[in-house]
Length: 469
Image (cartoon, rainbow, N blue to C red; front, side, top):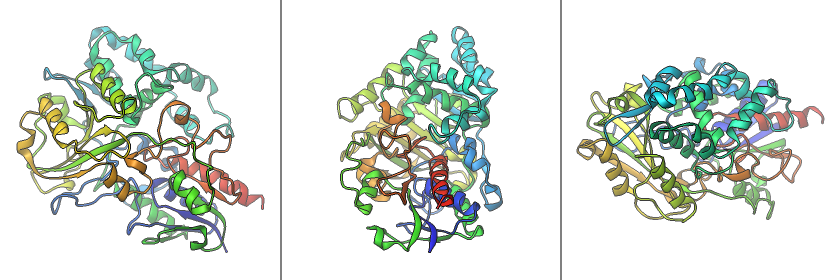
């Protein structure tokens, strides 16, 4: 009998399997797709030689992840590549604010009235970043914080709505950039703990950047899988699990799936009926005949580019999706241009590029024209560079990855109490109604992102149970 079976080979499932194998447990991992990866994959979606990341592409949480940093993933081919600027936020007048590795450079891009306010905001946390990130990404309520004073100070700044935090800024440049950071989790700007979201992304950039993985996000997943195999774990792909009886006997089962899928497979009935799925995204992957012609020169040097004219436009786009259930026009866009740091992604002189806008959960419309009109505002002539495009709305995203219910790439709304307490109100979020079944997907704390910490935390819960049996 195996010690543990893991279902789903996304970053969290892979991490959970690795953590258990590192501690001497026998582990087998089962994945429905023909390759491992989940939200960290790389495929030729458009033309031969153009390597696209269907979901996650830039990895501020990955390079800062305590779980990943404790593993020798570089031995298995993972190489982080840093763009000159982690992120840029251009404006219609051709200028841009930037999120740079340097706090001073970032603050200077906001203008003199907000430079000091930004430095004062991030300074108390940056010097304690490694301890802080471990504290707020660790197993909730079962691990004593290593630096409770800094964690409490972070909570005072981050738990209120981001609109409160942004009151310390006077000018639109800082407000727009920070609003864009919050919008990465597709939550209204005035929601609970949205200030913390913006702070985490900003601090991540200053600490270790927003890198891409050389060769594509698949490199993250492949490195985890190779490490797991070296530890004695086994990986089975093309293996769809429809019920627990489809799996071999084991002392514990760990699911990197949505709560909906887990309830169906394990027969948990209405256990997760209260779990909310959030808005979806409409994503376009482009093969381009050259770099994006951004008007702002800073955007040409950045790996990630946020597109929203000002904080009001960004807030309106989020509210239209989240509160009105409609697709926004103009949409707020998150875009990534991996070729700024990694020329291996496309043939010489060409580029891969992706952009996505937020849409209602399950939306079946086409946002292509609205996205490209928005891009043309900040990069005139963009359409002339397009060689091919691959579009994916909520139905396509859900078909590619069963965890993205209704196109929700966060595997559950990251808003309100569900941002912190997921998949349900519990002191033991990785446990389920069955004592031998656990959940480790992004539907558990600390939530969405390619960081593996949900898998790491769930593995802790599993090995504590196995150790005491």
